[in-house]
Image (tube, rainbow, N blue to C red):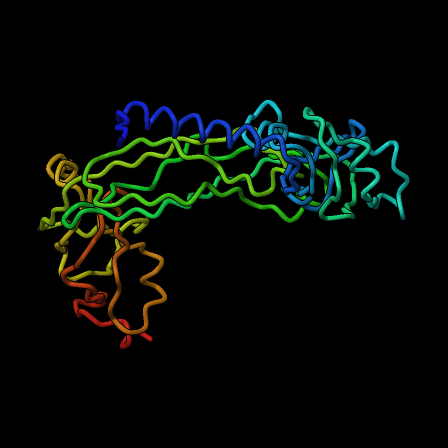
Length: 321
């Protein structure tokens, strides 16, 4: 007679089989690899000069329950702490930590057998500890939406940080980069917290972990600034030098809001009198003074005609030489 089993009975039996199989399996002995962080304790006035391995690997053996606890529970992670005062330097300020030094400082929250350590030897040097202030370098890749532009420079706050480490290590560090971040299709002003890179954390520490990065973004526009008077500065009384034309026009590009609110005297075209004394071709280019948040696209004319009136005659510079 065929016996029918309900789905619940089948599922329960399958569950019990899996539990029994897992219990038996986890009581068996296994060998595996795991990693841990290494902490090197130095005297207060010393610091490590070269980069240490970020991770130390160990080969361990134990039953499945203990290995599962070791691998998957954060509170059971191994760590190693080595006191340099107990290690003899090979030569002045240079140390080599061998397998015995690392295993002596190894703290294992779980009772398993440690079979091997990789790397077996760690070499490092120490130097006098020092501090210096370095500028923060932005590693942001910003892609603006077509028709939108940044107004002014990218602002980083703070724009510099204090780093601390060995004197020899700090001598080669002149700036501290942010993490590489990409912003796409940006069309409005932004303010973003960006992490600083920590690739040197084993032997150089920074005074902070992040900075604020911001930029003003506006829709792009272009306008014509006509009839800007040419100013001749530092000219003495009785000046006989003449510049023609006496006005220029500019095509400028910038944010729509900023261009709309420009003051009438925001743009100046200046020629210094003493630069005319060295003119040998009869043409000079005015120096433009304008707000930093706009860009000059075109100037008309680019050069001014320079003449000097002598005895009622207008002579060009090359005639005067």
